[in-house]
Length: 553
Image (cartoon, rainbow, N blue to C red):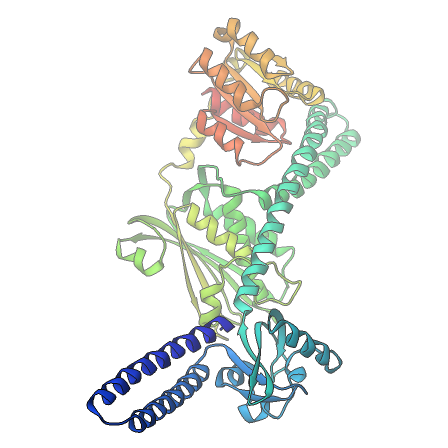
């Protein structure tokens, strides 16, 4: 409570006293008219006013005692002469204990030597509002906002202070600052990863082409293989940076959840405590869903790592799957906007420490973690929540302290099978050899490596260093162009602007987007405009070939 609340109460009571005074003055005037005499009316006034003052004191005492904020009365030598029950509750002391202490024992940020100066400052300003920390009996330092007021009663000076517990506010401020910091880091990480991926693209492309030339020389082939392996690992690091800066845009393609589980289990086999047994019982007949494979893999891996951390002394980590049918009532049970239909239920079960109901309620909150400081960011499970929600799925938790946990993911069954996806890749070589492709890329090295890769795959290629060059060529030759590969970030004219102009010339133009950024922001906007596909730099011949087959089919 701030001092303003006490002032309002006092003002209202003073108004009540004034009203009573006026009422009694009216009674006095009436008494004189009736001849009752002045002394009777004056006595009545004093009696009623005295009664009102007693009511004022009782009401003030009742108000202070029932405040949610702590209240302290402190005298000049720093002794505490009064506290309310809220102060005792907040700090964990009894009222008697607090009133035997000094305020410098309560205020963790004010040493005894500093108190005289603070008292003198309060006498000059009459009122001060500031933030500090109060020391609880258990040693915790509680952040509080204090409103201190100088009050004089019967010639004695008091500091009448109200202290509000602001732990929740401080936590929110910390989260806001953390969020802003993460946003800034995300933008920086995205920019660095984009530029680094462009450099990796040149290394990977040329090494990929070189691998075909040295295939008959085992020594040289091994050297090239090691270059490609190093580039792939570097690309994985930049992919993590891009995933960190990504804001929830997802690819939409068939994903086999059983394959995801097997890959995660393989990763864990090389990194998890050997005392933890990793098992899987995958029984879903239809294990595929439609979504972003990398994001779903990260979600399953985060759940597995969280389960690992819950078993510091070893245990069992079990993955299970089954197909389930959900009806409308399931939405209210889970609290996720899932519709009725067929779902894959993927469960991650551990035999670890389990979770309290409070932890279960907060486990998906950003920055919430039960791990020791520096051991976790509190973002892993928040990312799982976001991924599942964006894939129109749901999460259910079963856990008790010391009895392990089971987290169940419900994801819609995909409507497209992998067989149909594979059949679309059946274009023969003659169809590809006849395809003419435009490459629009401002980096000379990347333009050259893209041309070489495409020609090695049998395509006819024309390259351009800017969007305006490509548009001028396309105006006269669009009938002879089968597909355009566009870089997203280019000077003067971006990939999106270039695509829009190409589409004005030929509304059915086929185009692919290549970028060192992840699928987010402008990249997703170009796909929404009608670009057929996206390929992440750096990429090799195989990935490029698969995407071109699909786009040209």
